[in-house]
Length: 397
Ligand SMILES: *Cc1c(COP(=O)(O)O)cnc(C)c1O
Image 1 (cartoon, rainbow, N blue to C red):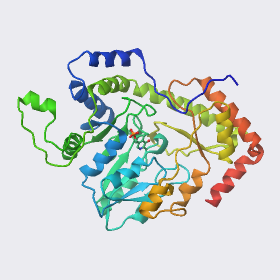
Image 2 (cartoon, protein in one colour):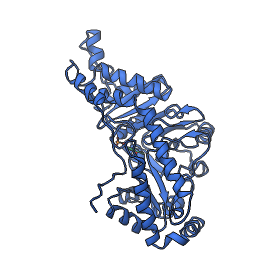
Image 3 (cartoon, helix red, strand yellow):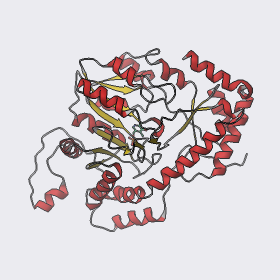
Image 4 (cartoon, rainbow, N blue to C red):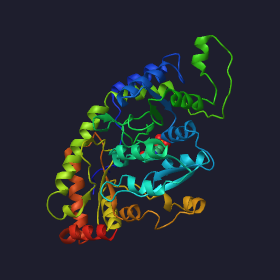
């Protein structure tokens, strides 16, 4: 004992971030002011798109994406089940029905073939989730969306800073949603954003984040006008100038952070490619031709419950991402979903473990996680036969 607790993720705040927030506090603007627009342009540039709209959370971003697409009662939206509940809840907020799709057993990304099977005449959109930070198979999803006249939304809350075939995450779907929560790549405390190349969709998100009125306070003041009209039922999902000051400062460090996450992931990869007992832990498959943003480093292990408990007891903040959404009591009751709907995700759920990964981690922290994980795997008896056991459970899936 005595070893410090190592969380699975953690924000990095430096003196530049603090100075940037202090400068906002000393300015005339606390809520929507010049720093919101500045952050939005920097984020749009980082994503390779025309527009980014800052909102109060990733969940708000997803909600407004659904409303911008006019999802409503009677509409179905296909969502992978292995994700945070907010990916599906946004459809419910809009009055629509989430339809859960299964994932690929190697990447745990949404399986386009399973999405295709779940398309009905009521389907209006697909939400892709870049699980763990790996961009989904967007060419396949885009082909499906085009063939069936569907919108393609990315829940890229794990993948800011990633890329697919040289195209940044943010430019791969019609609307891309990001979270700026402290556990994600870049933080504003709480916060989120929607990125898009579509001027009309961007304008709708902007209008809906501000009560559904046609101009925000600053725009009105600049126009010298007192007049505004509410044209839709919107929300107060604005993000403050204080938060955006932090976001702009954080965003400058994103490329370096992604590089460091990739380095740490490679250190994990090397250990799991070596000998027992660590070889019993199986990292997710990485598809070629992409830059992985590594929000999470996920392995599949035998006897996950025991391994998880052993790591926690050793001060390693391992976690599990996620309980498949279709298995939550609320979704089962409300949507009639249940065990058997998405067998690959259900089987993966029994084995997944997220290991600590954040830019400020030292190589020695990774080695400590690997030591403890090796001990835990050996103790479960997985050490010698674990690779075979994982292979067997995969076949059973
Ligand atoms: C974090 C996250 C969200 C929600 O973001 P908040 O900012 O916490 O509202 C949605 N989807 C996924 C996949 C996430 O990881």
